[in-house]
Length: 65
Image (cartoon, rainbow, N blue to C red; front, side, top):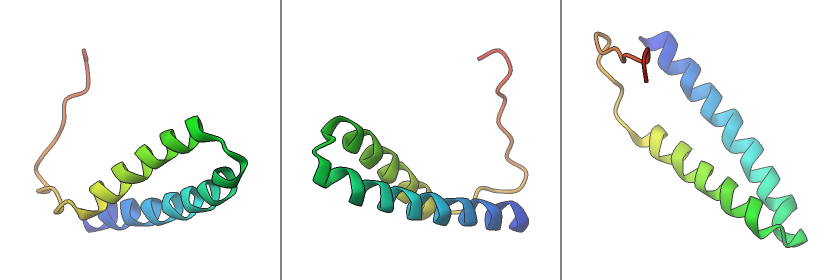
């Protein structure tokens, strides 16, 4: 599980860096709709990074959804 959690953390860091750069470029351009979408994504990533690690035995069923 540690390897997966580390990978998730790395992905989150890369995503946060990209989002911050995109928001800095788009805000001055007045791109309100896309800025709103990106801010919502940013909130989700921040939320996920604050969540405690999931137990290693926990699985999710995605078939049939």
